[in-house]
Length: 194
Image (cartoon, rainbow, N blue to C red):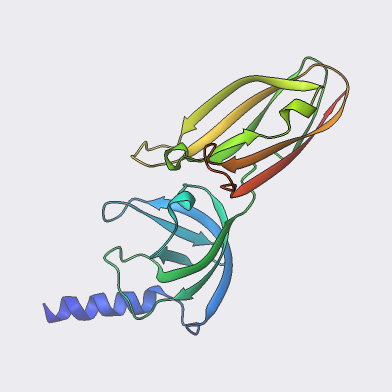
């Protein structure tokens, strides 16, 4: 029993880098980790794995890119036994757009894929639809991530078709439709129809 306790303590100690226990600012990707019943961890761009103790529900989206400030919590332990425990001080979504812009012919279609998790109540809304006249949506699909688990995210696939020549921007907001001031991400997509 004593050996197991020592091994556990060493694992927790070495799971985090030897950097000082200071505030940090990072970017990374939220991922659903299938260990110990499953949880959301952060794969940071610096190669670290972070196990946040307070990731807000609306950011628990597998594949969501985020920027966050945090404090390492070396004073705590987790049964996840994965990555460094951190307390998030501030978090915001980064760009999750899988396509950046489009140049199409009249009557040609294209798809915009946006990372999403409708189980949180958040979804993408096309906010400038009324002012865009050269194209329109001709299809929408929500595709769940695999494996399909309770609360797991996916992506929204919007299909557009160009109807006349011109240039425009499609503006999206990731928000809860029934809540004012709930926008946590925005997208701007340039489209040229020739």
